[in-house]
Length: 86
Image (cartoon, rainbow, N blue to C red; front, side):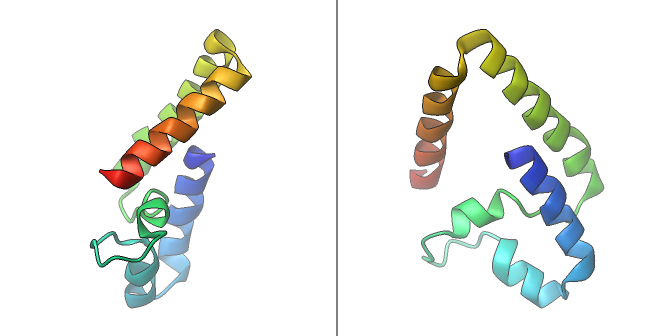
């Protein structure tokens, strides 16, 4: 999910104006509740997408195969919550 979101966020970089893209995807810790989640999808650099999207997609499939769907979903949710607070 995050890998495909990163690809879509990179594509939005070309469609949106820079100020609007920065408003939606640039994390600047201004206190908006969903900004950390939205910043995970934004990238304006092809080098970041070249390694993050495939590693998230392939790594997610590998972890799901090795640990099972339920445990990997719990691991994903706990990781998201921990990343949000830090």
